Image (cartoon, rainbow, N blue to C red; front, side, top):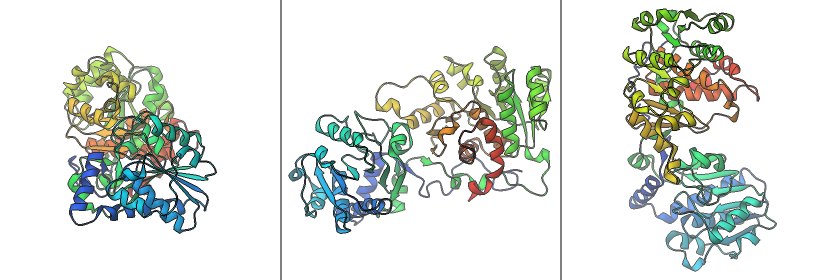
Length: 506
């Protein structure tokens, strides 16, 4: 089983479909896409009408007819709300619309949309929620510039306290579109309708939790325009790495499918999980280096297809050109021996996957580790390990931007960094980023990170470039978890990995 050996060579570069609708935009990029589309001949009010129609359709296809309250803000987000209100009213929905601020002060396309609304405009958004069965939050979109306060904050708090299902327009009001951080106060949405592409605030931080399911509506902004403004941030998807996934061939044998070297210690369970996951995704052989009798015994009992070798063979095996890559961390222990193993493995020139203790032993000495790794290596920290290696964020929205922090970390280390969490961010040293958001909460269980490290190393052993392997592994890990029982444990993930090829490739 091999990627580069049996299919397209994975050199780690971006594929031709690096865009393909998977772009994640900053608010600045979205604004520029709007401007270019309008400059190209599409009136802004046409974009607003399509946006409002998309919101109304999203509501009408998911809920039965009921009283709906639309809260409109002072900008274009509010204009979208006016269009959605008009459409729903035309379809027989009882609609109450409330405007934050003086409707006479609306400008541009929002003023045009407001003029087309023939119903009453309420001034008290809190009172307007009474008797509603659903609310549309069209107060503030992704471009919110400052924390909500005053009446705006009061309206959002009332919306949150109402218990109503809330459909957010573009972004839940109060969520920073460029960081996912809450500015002052925010209300969770049952559904968010955004336009053209997802924004950063939909996929990281509190924004991921508050946005609910996100519908991306086509409002007439051409793909070519999006591609012309988009940076290197993408939503993780098989289209980005499908061509390089290892493929099984009749001519395969265990040596052609790669030989992974795992340096372990006395934590037997972690080593078993990582080795088993690597083999489950196709690594032909896995050799585990350990002098810990407990670990060796556990591998023989629970992963009998794994080769166990004594620590004394480490220099020999590390020098063997047939062994690649090297995984250190699962079961390693926080010891000088682990640190030395990382240093020696880095000197071998083999690709490295460093997880858990292999990162922790460099706590407060990140520069020492960064001097050892390169673009062929993958670091897989969770939030605490990331902070210990790269420093804690400053206060404020900029510090909360996980994508920016992970990109900076990858550039600093010169390696691939997979920053784990419900919003897993994978960054390459060249600036490319993918974000994986499909992992279920059940992944928050001991050992799941060891499984993920094993998947990454197992894919690299078969020819995938580290960035592609890390992105593919994040999705495999998530899909395996979704296929497991509700109360999964890490052992379940290894078994589930065997049944998901068709879901990943198609």
